[in-house]
Length: 520
Ligand code: ZN
Image 1: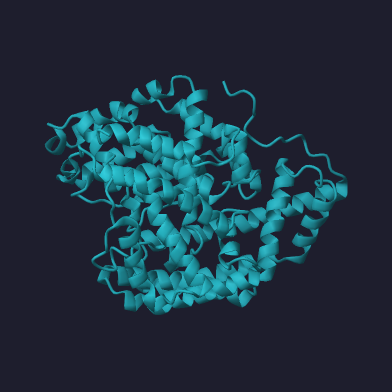
Image 2 (image 1 turned 120 degrees about the horizontal axis):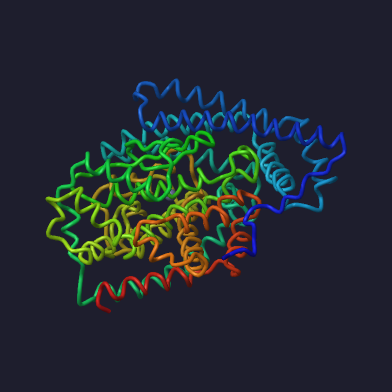
């Protein structure tokens, strides 16, 4: 099945003159050197988030700054730029989607961005990323937005400078968003999110008045951390995440990082009084991890061995977390495991009760714990706020009240404090601005891909009900992971499903799943 495409790049053997061969080899070596430095940076970041003592923050910031400055010098190296330009204009001009053509295209794009950024700004951003993160951790713990506000203001000032240096016409949001989701704009994000908001609000209204509600108290029983840790590792490994080529550690904010082709770091957090926190964040991050482990190791540092976009990355995590991990077939397989791991909490609970509980829909304050139906509304709020901060129509001092007002307006609930409000996400503290819409795109890509996978992978639901995930994983490997960054996310979704990105599969999925649960 699905034999129409090899999934990967259309890579005929590369035929180059001796001079172009030398250029190509220089380009590859240089790009791989940059990737080595980049991966060291990720390792430092992982360490900072998992283990570094807080007093180490100052020197860590110096390490980040030095690395960023050195990488910037490599990106803006004249010979590198010249080689790329000559290869792009010469032998690779007519093959932009071959392995080599894509590599040159993607690298040139990044070089063009980097030469526009002054080194002093690159250093300031790297320094702010590390120091501000540390301030955010303390401010969040103390529920003290004022302690975080000055460094947040500095981050947005620098991000605006970055946007101005990169250049923009419609919104300074565009060049920042483009880094995470190549070729997408703030206007695209607004269109997608407004469309979702329009469709989600009536669905949520129906659910609010539903005659039946799941009993979610069963998820709030006592779930010992040791058993949560065991079951998380077991499930991650069962869906295909290789623990000999990755790790799973506790951290305040769940994430996935690729330190090297055979070294993918996942984190999760545990809450003894809430089953879902670690279980679903582990599945989510393992989905990211499967993507990283599925990238072509021989192409590490080059476009065919890189992820497509952050929206596509998020599609892989959401697919495993929600489309697999909150489905009936999955729990036919996994419920006996989980019931056995937590006998005190789940001995008298049926699979159907459990399935309904993990699919409850309830407006909530914390994005990473939001259900599938309300999740995108958290993104709507964040996107508009960060766009307004960047464009200058919202001041940092007004941020907490704007945040709380938006939650009240869009989700009908008001955060009682900033820890459960504006201080909850790590992103802005580390200078990640223009990223949030990739989460909503990920949800849409995931549903569209999954709907198609069902028609291509033989007896997929039955296999999942038996705990066999190989068919689905192989499909994702061939159609997404092995394609790397050869095509844009928009091109890739069309190549896989034959359709442009649409919210229809997502909304169909929600209605098909939720209406029966709520007896609607
Ligand atoms: Zn994610």
